[in-house]
Image 1 (cartoon, rainbow, N blue to C red):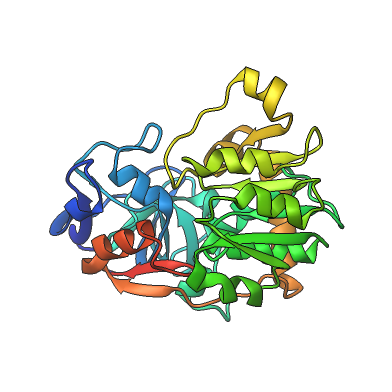
Image 2 (cartoon, helix red, strand yellow):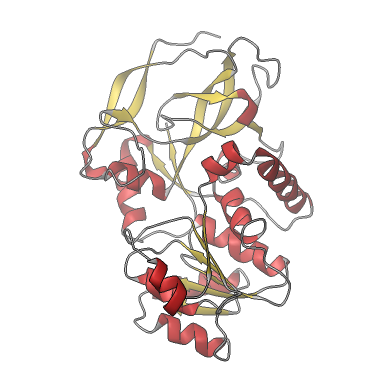
Length: 330
């Protein structure tokens, strides 16, 4: 197989937002080093982290100009030294910097085989959205049958997976979403849906839980809504797992935790979890594969944009115009 030396890619040229993303045709095709594989990208996943990076709000994020994106599915076309598995020709999904392009380097150890009967687009989410939702629910959130979980952005890719898994584990689910997305969240099995823009969100959650509050909150709202998440959590025993800040940064002080919000506050970054607690991530992935095998987690087709329309995809995600997973096709 002949591999070209240059490729089409989406380059972020500033930290002013996705509108400053441009399509280039002369980006260098990378060469796999030791422990790496090179894939020809079939489809790349769009995540809110891509939006944060474009605005310079992602901790230790890349500096422009850089090829955007980090999640992709494709066929392995070359392998580096010390790589025996996976092999050339295998279809895999994984995470690597510069996914909005025709070719992408992935660490071989993190390249997950695509199930034989799944399309490339359906496999998106297997290494980002689904593990994040499961980590927030299980090893960190410690969800148990009969407990109530509040899931923000329940119509998004991670939120949808969280709703499905939380119901599987026997939880009562309260999802938040904008008004036009409520039926989508209900169809996933959510017991209640609250308008994500409601000024009385915490009061509504407390009302639905007879004043007790949610046992677990999956917090991605950030900004002004962060305080509502803390207020909606059950006192003392309630857990708030924070893994997103779509509405911007928010602060909580030690005084808040002692005198106002006596809750258990937990931070989640899936990349850090993989690096710092690989045994936890290994068990998590094993559980996820069991959920797939048993039909709890089923693939769905994302909304696919052309690579040249990447800026539009990120803008649509940022402005909450979308439902479920988004993808770019080179």
